[in-house]
Image (tube, rainbow, N blue to C red; front, side, top):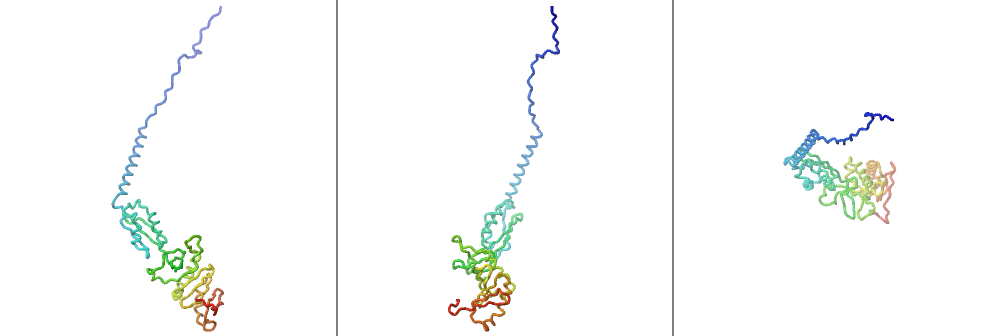
Amino acid sequence: MGVKAPAEKNFRRARIKPGRRRRPQARVSWRAVRIVVAVVLVSYATYRAFELVVSAAGLRIQHIAVKGNARLSEGEVRTLSDGIRGTSILTADLSAFRRRLLQSPWVADVALRRVLPSTVEVFVSERTPIGLCRIKNQLYLIDRTGVVIDEFGPQYAGFDMPIIDGLVRAPASAQPVLDERRADLAARVLDAVAARKDLARRISQIDVSDLHDAVVLIEGDPALLHLGEERFLERLQSYVDVASALRERVVQDIDYVDLRFGDQLVVGPIKTTHKRP
């Protein structure tokens, strides 16, 4: 007869069902809330303060001070400034104002500065005309970079400048284009003789059709003077020194004088059968 051993409680599987784990409830950090609220309040206060400053009557642009202008009148500058006058000096779009000023053909560059509480200073760099260029039978003022400034008219009667030919390139469109390199050659000729005002005043015409040979006409002398691309003052002076003797002893009617060969002058007489006008 078998004996039934009592079961060990230590090995008996627990009959208690495991309970469900409770998820931890999200705890609200009042410190974080206070920080967020503080940031929002500070941001709003800053925005309102900025709005008040920007809209302040004392910071509205009332004065446009123009400096460096000679040909561009202050009235023209003020007309172009209509868009910013009365706006806040802190938020005015000076870049747009600058772009409008640069549309004037006389303006080469311009700088703007805000001066609190209500002034904008305008520093203008104007173009300097060096001569007159013929375009479609009209004369135009041009600067040393070949930029057309304005059509020559009675308002510029005080300008005493040479006519510069050979600047116009064959246009790809209907609008003529001026060659910057040829304009630079003409400018270098004028720069070289600028110190000698007596000679500078006598230059009546410059032809820069050939980039390597500036041809000059001086007042009261029909000879074409080939100066090359360097030593302009020296070569021009060498001709002026011998011009009278050259006509008296060599040839009376000179078509051209080539001064590019050092001390040697190459003289071309005007052909009697076809005199140059």
